[in-house]
Each structure stands twice: as structure tokens, then as C-alpha cells.
Image 1: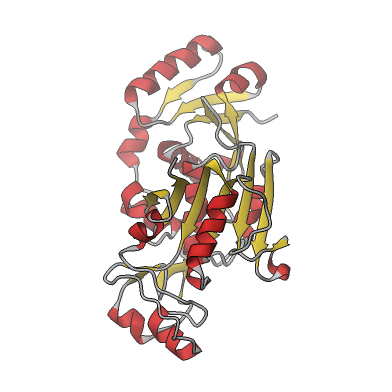
Image 2: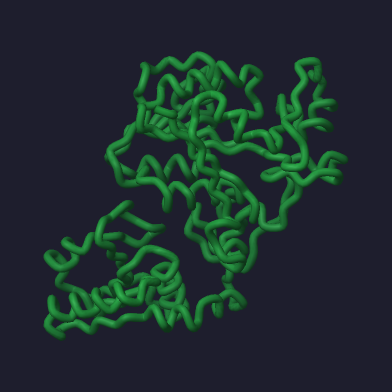
Length: 343
């Protein structure tokens, strides 16, 4: 039986360690370990708790400690060494990662799609609405032409990759007991959420063939306070009656629940909407897409806070180095909103 390589740490350093092991051709032997497990798998790699590791694994070949905190790394190295009594090598590799961070970025397969766990030479460019005048005059986050838009392996897009990254790193949606409502579900994200056996998953769309349930977002058929998470990625810009939709979403959300939401945003103007704009061409020119009924602007936070929500904005540029944004093919200034009821 092949011995397992344990990488302690599932953050940036731990994932970077796996990249180096992949180059060596031995990443298939890796298991992640962390003190408190938030998700059971990261990509194809299983994640075990510290207790599970020291009590239930007999086929460990080496333990690599890959976390940023040098003092904590040394403490863990001493702890593992005492537990395994020198039977298993324990190596603290944070200095190695820190010294070599980014050196793989210019090698082959320098991009990674977290939707399908594929390593790629490059992503594919794309644009949903084409090169219209609106995109020439204004930079609209999440719309228009992007160089790293599509994954050539799974056809997933940049916006979905950022959503999945945030769900994986900033929520417990993949490991907790939770009820999830997902509007206009993206297949790769939907499948990942449903892999959590503790999760009761519901998908909804105005068209039944696109989801599990036909749901009018302005008249949701579920009871009050039912969902822990409600996901709406690029949905709200399609909804004529925004206020009714938000009130319904808040109604079916638990007091401690989270609304995860994104939409195109133009930061150099206020929100544009006009109920008299109904033709496809006018909507395309004013909002960027024929089925959009508004273009959100720099007042988006105030707009949604006025519904009684507290909002945290997650953007790659605030959480990641430029080389990692490029590697994952994220939109640098993309924005994902995590909204909670103001109690």
C-alpha cells in the first residue's frame, strides 16, 4: 500500500504545497489535515481532522506542515513528532513555500479551474453580450469581454469560479447541516453542494426544466425562516419587482442565514432602471443584456442595506495576490455579496 502524504493546512500554503507535489507526480497520495474540518474534500483531496489523523491512519509516510504562522508551525511540528515518536517524518515547509511562492506560475498548466479540478495552460476569452457601446464607455464588473472567462475543460465561467471559491473558503456550506435554496443553479456548483450529505438542497427557477422547483422569486412557496443559505448569482438584474423578491428571500431565510448574491455592477454611475425600457435593443444598449431590467451601480450597497441587510463584499483583489487571481481565472474586481438579516 502506498504511504499517504499528509499536508497540514488547507489555506494558501497548503494548496501551494499540493501544487509542488503535483509537479512531482505524487499529488494523488495527498490527504489534507486541519484542526477543525470545514469541508470533507478540497477538489479530489480528502480532508481529515487532527483527531482522525492521529487515531485512525496507519499508512502515513510523511507529514508536511504548510501554514503561514511560523510559531504555530513549529508547535505543530513538535506535537506531531511527539505523537509519532519519530516513526514518521514531520517537516515544517512554510519557509520553503514562502521562498518559492509563485515560481510555478510560469510553468505549464499554470491555471486551475476549481469547478472541475483541471490544471490548464490557459482559460478561454469570452463575452456574453459582445462589444456593445455600453462596454466601451463603462467598465462593468461581471459583464463584457474577459480574457480568462471560460474553462476549456468544463466550460464553467469566471464568475462561477469565484462563487465556488468563496463558498469553499468563507462558508461552511460543504460540511454543515444546512438547508440551501439555489436560484438559477450553475451545474458545477449545484453538484458540489449536493455532495454534502448533511445538506438539504433545493434549486429553483421560473422555468421548471432548469431546476428542481419552479419558483417565482417574488412569491416563494417555502415557509418562513427555512433556509440557511440562499444563492442568487446574476439573478436580481432579471427581476422586475426587486423589492418583492428581496422581501420574499428575507422571509424564507433563517435569522442566522446568509444570502449569497452577485450581479453586474457599474461603479462609475448609479443604478440605471426605467420601466419604460422594454425593447430588446434598448435593454441591450442600456443594461448590457436583452433580458436585464436594470444595471446596478455604485449605490448597490445602500440599495440592499435599505431592505434590512448587513452586507460583506468579497472581491478577489482584497483576498488574493495577483498571481493567484490569474491562476484561478477570476475577475480581479468581481464582487460577491454575503448578506444577513439585521437583528
